[in-house]
Image 1: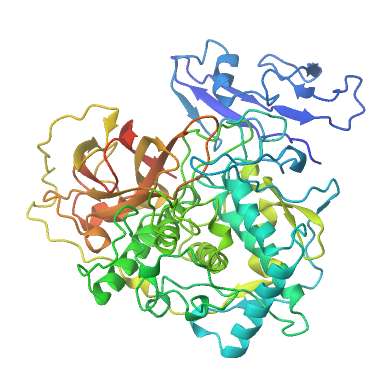
Image 2: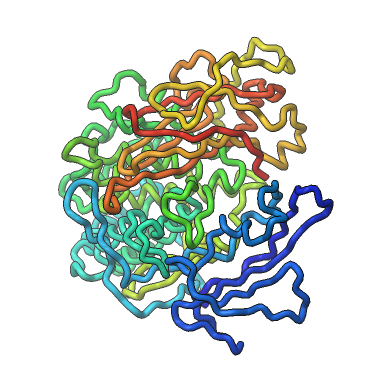
Length: 608
């Protein structure tokens, strides 16, 4: 069914002085449902089941209502008002993951796709060929599980076939949805606001697959269909073809694979940074505004160590819960600039690899191709980059019992549209992307040295349990992040037991990070780094990084983006001997020009 579905029961306990006060309700939001009820919604109407707190089992409050906004859905923030004065102004404990009507992001209407308006340059048409016929994805009955190889380990026969597959894809007619340019446009359309959310014409209510929990499943589906198209084009040469993954997390794969750098190859892209060609090692903690032609400040050995330690921070110590790894929810009706945030991997290493590979930004360049999301899919290496990002999803789920896929139905039921190898327009759901073997592929086993690259704990001069005090002035928010700043942040609870730590991760949240989204933004975060010495991931005090890869569009004016970033810090506090401290010193090190970023606050919370 294409309409929205019932949400799970939501229990709310209100701390308003009334002992045991609670409410439970189900909300239904169905567009044009097929129902035998006497009150049937007409087009552009919505069928809503209203359950009163005093309703009996015989009450029937079903009704048809006109849309109350452009989307025809209710804003979740307004729902508390509808719950009555008993909850308004109180502190509520939400026992469900979120306060929401059932609202997965549905597949876009291709007929509503519109061009992207860049900040500089001509408008861009990312829209795919239109088709009104949509089929739902079905798993093959007996899928043959193929192995995606590491790019640095493939042989000459594989490389020859891979080149031929991309050559044939580029030679397809321009209006063929399987054509390479059409495939590249998919990323542009989904990431730069070309699709309004179904039922909306508001430019702020668009489908956006970055900076939220949609990042991993969208890109998994995207490269899945791209791979299927390539495989079908060279079935005569290699019936078992799969795309390679660029293993930039392994020292042996930290350069651009050589077969992408041959000038006469269909895998070559002229819009890459000429200074970052082999044997230059990728910098997974790259400063997007400090891409210099020659950087002699770090040795290859130090770069490898920095990369491995960043991987450890982002995937092992800093992402022990699903929300830290996948990012924040985004649901139907949410605006694109809603304060949600991406997960640890989306920020880095994903973001820096994009920026490192793309052309340096200048007056005449927006970082194309890889360095700007609207153009990233034009570089064949994009798909190998994201194959490795996809591989990290599989690795992460094997690192601990709490590292599991999200169970929220709004995530599981979210939808995307892709063209397959037979030019069928296929609707897919997130829930069908969770098992790569069911999709017919796994990844070649290679060493994962970053699993054991934990920074050595620093020896503190402060005795354990001394409740170290930080002598810094109180910071007033909102704060213009124009220089290095240190902020004392109070902890909700100190001296937690081992059991408490296993049940809840301590999380640092930087809220209201606001900037113009066509800029590349990066700042590093340190905990209890009193000397404020730069050092990046090599330092024990390094808590993680925030990276924004530029989006190249505007809606009438240069667009402001507001987001947030979360950092798991339980293990870090243990290493720093700060478990018994009432507060921590958070240092932010910006790596961009002044006047670009403000932040609204910093806090510490617990994530179950």
